[in-house]
Length: 165
Length: 178
Image (cartoon, rainbow over all chains, first blue to last red; front, top):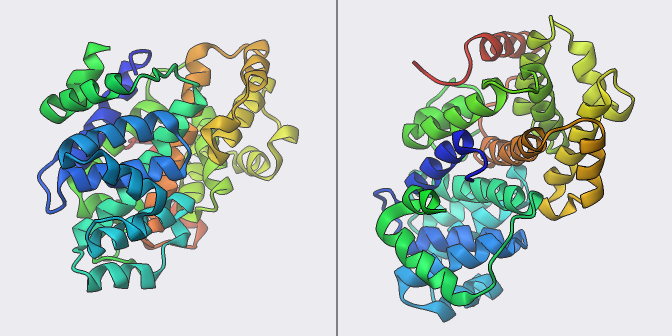
């Protein structure tokens, strides 16, 4: 990100709006979607950092592990499960999202905005995962590093943390 | 027909952008910087990378509009753009661009598909670190744009003229609303 600030700026703004802006989905729920997609894409960096942020918001690390392993049996709402299904399909490819997937989410109470954002969060993380892995970014492996960063992002947002380096 | 109540009559990504302006703004800015910002890669080259990745992702709206944008940057030469999408290794483009397209094609499959050898080949053909970075990020960004456009089942025009006009606007006016 520091290598190319002109592209880091819109990337950070996009993630900030999507994951931390005012919303009917909580920040924890939205970070779970990002984490789930990143784990489906096998991106260790993204799933670890966003998993830590989700865990920080939800105050529940094991739940994040459950969602990544098998969200259908995790202790989350049926609506969030339907949105994760949409996110998972989007990650495979946009055309994989079916009208039935969307109808199911609506039946469980999802609004158009929530469905839109499930698709867009998945799409954004398909970008971020490829960007990170494509450049083979150095990744710290210590879990405490992620916990500390997670707390900072939760308080100050993504742009502030990126500027820290 | 779109999966959600997007504003009617707006083609492709523009309907999503109209539905959610707060996310549209940084997405437009990203496209502008990546495809039209100052760069040692020409806009024609960068739009060809975008069209190539979009065609690999089978996203008609994105590949057709960015093909048109590329053509408009290349004095109307749709032939080169079609050649790149069909078989970039034999297309009349530079060895450096072929090496960058190879990297973009790997990124389209997944970030981990990019190997040291791909990067070394690009460097051997004269690509700078910034050019390699941008090939990766353009490919990654279009993996986002393609999924957004098709994930919402946005309206996909089918006629060439509509895309030709879109491409002209994209090439001359860019992606940011003023």
